[in-house]
Amino acid sequence: MSHPVQIRFLPAEPEALLTHPGRIAVLADQAALSPALRRLDRAMKGALARALGSEAFGRLKPGEAMELAFPAGLQAEALQILRLPRRTDPAAARKAGAAIGKAHGPRPLIVLADGHPRAAEVSFGLALRAYSFDIYRTGETKSPGAVSFMVAQPEAVAAEAGPMAALAEGVFFTRDLVSEPANVLTTDDFAARLAAMQELGLEVEILEEEELAKLGMRALLGVGQGSESPSKVVVLQWKGGRAGEAPLALVGKGVCFDTGGISLKPGAGMEEMTMDMGGAAVVAGVMRALALRKARANVVGLVGLVENMPDGRAQRPGDVVRSMKGDTIEVINTDAEGRLVLADVLWYAQERFSPSGVIDLATLTGAIIVALGHENAGVFSNDEAISAAFLKAAAAEGEGAWRMPLGDAYDAMLKSRIADMRNSCGREAGSITAAQFLARYIRPDMPWIHLDIAGTAYTKADTALAPKGATGWGVLALNRLIRDRYE
Image (cartoon, rainbow, N blue to C red; front, top):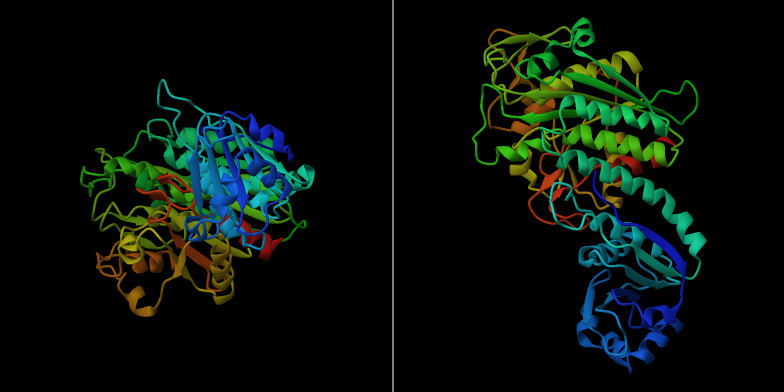
């Protein structure tokens, strides 16, 4: 597991800043200095006030920073000055925290937030950005230095930050899962990590291949039949709402490694297919956050865990498989495997739990990256209300999401020469036809969202709140949706 930064909230003690040997970060604006900042400025012989009054500081947007190295009058190695007006939004506060987190190293850090009303949001942004997955690096520091937030009311800020800490742990859990190599995060290991969350109050059930076969999940089992790792479905239930109230169902694609199967992917870049279980990781992270913050909602998370390998027993292009629903699928491309996994798990979720709504997440198509890049996940839905609620939640959390179309013309493209449908329709409208395929496994009256997160689950460049690599996209938005709509 990664080593998250340790944050504590303490009363503001300006004198401690003068002798602190590491880094110091201060939240400030061009308005009048607080008493603590005035004390710091006196020690610096007016240098802080000059910096705040400078044209360079004036050009900074809320949440951005400037830095003074080895500031005169202090023992600190660096003073980071963040522009953050008291009347600012949470996004700017998280951005300020992320700027601190990005620069934070192994030495202790003091953040002077004084009486800033967004101190808790700043700490949240700092924690998210300070994340690093370095457990396989030898000879390097394994954890960032502790962070002390100096605030006017430590207990009140700590109480406000509590639910954010639970949410951060959910994001980190998702990032850790996506970052793990496939020889470590096998289907067995993934299931074991989920089972361990029973200690948080989740009910966890692991369905093995024999039971999946009895249920008729031949579409899912077909994907994993070429792998030595057994296919599984893991069910996680959080019962924090009213007894008997229908749960929201979250369904995740968990392909622990995807070679493409017999339709083998090109070798270049295949190492990134350790992230093809990103949808299942987001479901796991959300369920962890809900349990940690004791959410007052009923939510069930279901993940299909498989590995797609080109063994002699592997599924072939041209095979026909029967889903749990009972219809038949012609396998055109074994690399269009995620929709086969989701088809059975989606049907099972509705059959067993009769949920109030279903949201599935999957690193499903490269086509969504062509359409939306790495800025937005694709949102497909059959219900205006739940779609609008999710898009609002995603916007509030700064997680990019864009509504994509569905329609009869796209559905017609799924026509097979010999079966009820085919699993791949080629490059044209690839992300839409994949969503249309999944829509066939959603009951007509069931509110449903499909999130294609292929472009947002894992990036090759830093994002606002995450270093390059696994982002944890979706945990924040889904948590907010559940908080606002289902609690």
